[in-house]
Length: 124
Image 1 (spheres, rainbow, N blue to C red):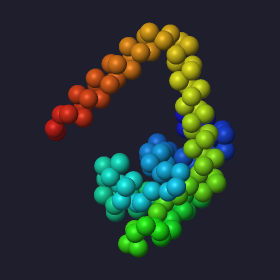
Image 2 (image 1 turned 30 degrees about the vertical axis):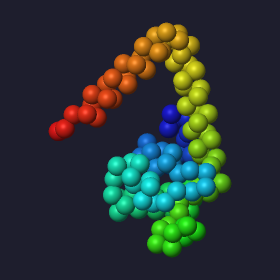
Image 3 (image 1 turned 135 degrees about the vertical axis):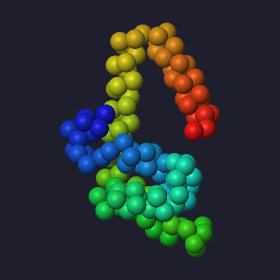
């Protein structure tokens, strides 16, 4: 997926970047909300967001609803990247379904749901 994103003009995007970008809503999202969604501290999230700001994918502004918070929004470059990743994801899903067929794809999804549930319920 990220190789295709690089070919589409976004050579500097990683899985970790994508994990941040998907949690930014169309009207922006607070840093705290992104951190909660990712299960990390606000301090850890700040570094990831600042990296995306530096590369031109996100911007940070005061939150109009909370003077103590900052709102993270996509720049045009960020919106273009998200649209590109969505398109790539759709194409990959279609290719997988064409290869597996709808019944086997549904079986795979169910198996992955079980694996995810088991993996996330275990305490290490």
